[in-house]
Length: 262
Ligand code: NDP
Image (cartoon, rainbow, N blue to C red; front, side, top):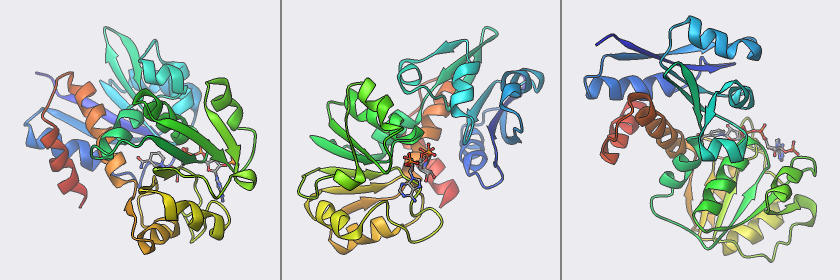
């Protein structure tokens, strides 16, 4: 069998753990394949580069997930609803686009499925999580700093609010931070006292950022179940991997990916 070639397209890509995640599993399963990084400078060249580099599949990261959606010939249901693609596979000469952030997030909850959830932030990640939770019967509210990006959610039947009018007395079993607040500094998405009020009533606090943010430290301080975004990253990679090799593999293989980045 010819060696299969996969890559991560994005800008930047140098920091990414994706090559490590995929190559560790290719090695473990003795699959003749290699996964590398490609710094894409121009979103208009996504399809052209994919084909000219002779790739079998790619993952797409910031800021090209929407361009990837537009470049595909076929789309899965999640990708269609979300309007963003993070995995493309070449099948019969066509680019098939998928969104594995959505099932990856659900898998990373380790069986915890709340009755309701509050998503903080309204960007691409919030879209993936909102559709994934809704598909699993969860009542979802999206809260954002500004109004603009909330429109998409309202058009798709979600309840929305902005941080300034979000009611601190509300009760959400799951609160997920998908904002970039906390990524580079000890910043919170909004006012500390209101966040503490909401966290005090929740069952599970989740931050899509990979590190222990101030948001998670607050949840931990309140004795709440909490998780950062590393498992989500690993689980979305696992679902992408299955699409790359076009085969079902045991969920235990997630453990091989976890070991590779721990
Ligand atoms: P987007 O740029 O699409 O959206 C960013 C969101 O954050 C917007 O809602 C924006 O609000 C809000 N925001 C930005 N800065 C602040 C701030 N200082 N205070 C409050 N709100 C703020 O980003 P993505 O959805 O692509 O990514 C969001 C986060 O999720 C990132 O931190 C990223 O690292 C993480 N992520 C993790 C993944 C994983 O696998 N674990 C996968 C993908 C992303 P506004 O609309 O008002 O500007």
